Amino acid sequence: MSSQSVSRKQIILEIKGKAKIQCDLKRHLAPRTVGTIMRSLPLEGHAHFLGKNIAYFETGVDSGTERSVKEFKRGDIAFLSSAGGICFFIEDTLPGKIMAPIGKMLGNIDALKDVKSGDVFCLYEETA
Image 1: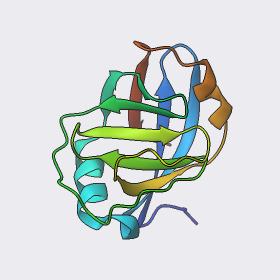
Image 2: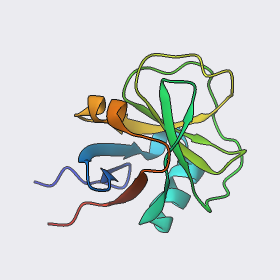
Image 3: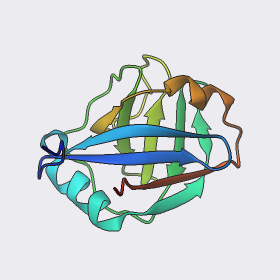
């Protein structure tokens, strides 16, 4: 039985030339935003940082603010509507910006500690 469903989508965050991290996008967290991101895959962009605990890349996705929160845990994935950015949380943090939670990283989170500004992030659907 597949773990895929309409409410959950397994995707891959690839740090080009460095690592791949299995991720889950969860539609119930922010239905409109997750739907827009899923229809926009694959997405690619250069890595940036908000502080030292949040790696992100900017996308062309424009979804507005939806079900935003201010506190995130290690492994969370969030959408920063002001930059159209997809954010990956390396440690528990209060980013000082409200973001919509959209999913979770399922493993190898520490690979993000080796990311340098300018590395390329690619987010895509896992294919069998």
